[in-house]
Amino acid sequence: PEDRPGVTPRFFRADLLDLKNGAYRCTYSSLVNMGSYTVSVTRDNLHIGTSPFTLKVGPGPTSNLTSLVSGPGLVQVKTGVGAALTVTVKDSVGNARVNSDGTPMSDAITVSVSPSDTNVSYPTAFAHQGNAVYSGTYTVTKA
Image 1: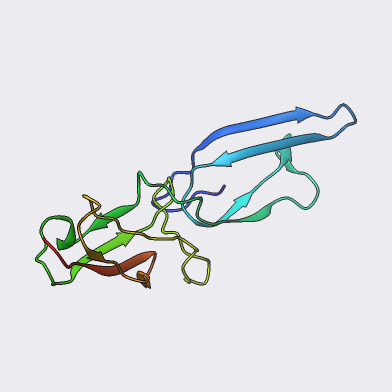
Image 2: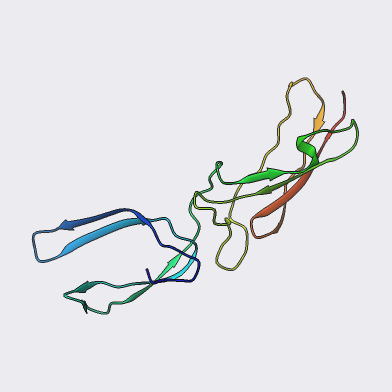
């Protein structure tokens, strides 16, 4: 990938396989931010074929380690009063989980409260607020 201000591309795995017929197969996984990158395939500093190529990088699968949850509904609630939560869904590199047009990817957000005998009404769905941020409320109906 080409250099971009504020982005340091890092590849954690790259494999080059000699197919024994004059061709090679290169596979790699990248840890880069979303966006467009230039991939150059060269030999002796000369581009091969139609290199360079434009590579579009989108978000990876949802990561529970980098996704965030916040809001007063995590700390204290009152019976009969809606408790608000905000969830920001990210991939393992911290990219927001949205499509290239900004629409949300299919991430199911659920809330559960323990102990199980607590009466709770849950939101039917968390509303997408933009940039992979979802908000919703739940209400504890019995203390």
